[in-house]
Image (cartoon, rainbow, N blue to C red; front, side, top):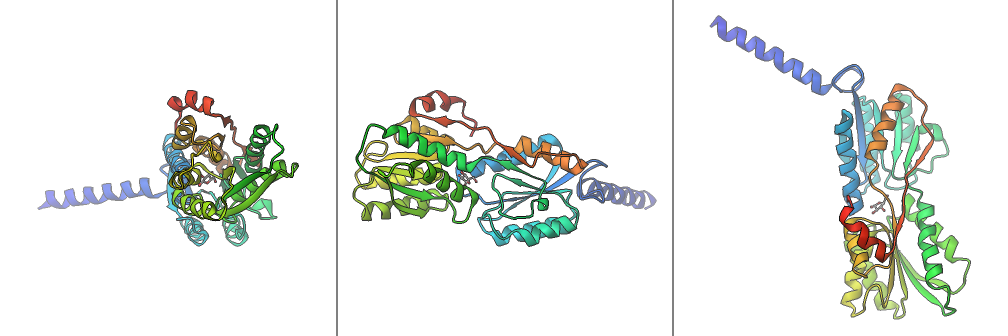
Length: 325
Ligand code: AHR
């Protein structure tokens, strides 16, 4: 009997120490004094890019020994705000998030600041005037991406004086990449009046919506020369719509997209897309480095811009075999 009681006591003590390891130091739940717990609020799983980004964040947290509390907002700002409030309540050491839209974050960011939890913006920006509400912003220059798309188009049509009819599939309404990729593109093509955006609508960064909106574009616009899609997934959906309408993507309608995920690169190598502007989702390693620094109270740059390139059809053929995502 005595033996059974001591076995139960030992089992109880073991269980207690295991939950203390996994559940947390006072500062948020890691395993030791300098263990870090990060609350990460992801936009959703709307695209191939997003899936690769989630994997990069999860793998890098593991490699860096950071405990990750991951929350998928399913493309809804209210879910992200709830997740951030829950991270504050759980007293995580650092919060990182990719804001689905640019506006409407000041209140919750102020709550994090008051709780003395540093915030890192990753992938997408917010439009808060008060930049002390977050420590740094890691991600692409979306305006530059839009400009690169426009520059390719200007070069492609440099010898023609005929009007060029463009349709645009925008990303999620109000999101930084949709706003900036539109603005950058417009800035470049706006210098020559032969370029006309004859229709522009959101496809919410998804393949299904890209297909649906392109079908509508094709019905109401018989003379489309170019499609500019704010990501590969919408472009890939649009290709299905173009083929369904009996036209040849990449020839009858030239296509420019952004991201350079594997499926997009395959379509580029196959001649169905004409040009892709890269947007890298592999932000995890840099995010974990920044997180360690901000938790220690070290200075970090206010803005960390991701390095990116562009791909023609020929370049895609060479790059495909070594593409990581
Ligand atoms: O914020 C990055 C964008 O979001 C990617 O270009 C797009 O594919 C994703 O859904």
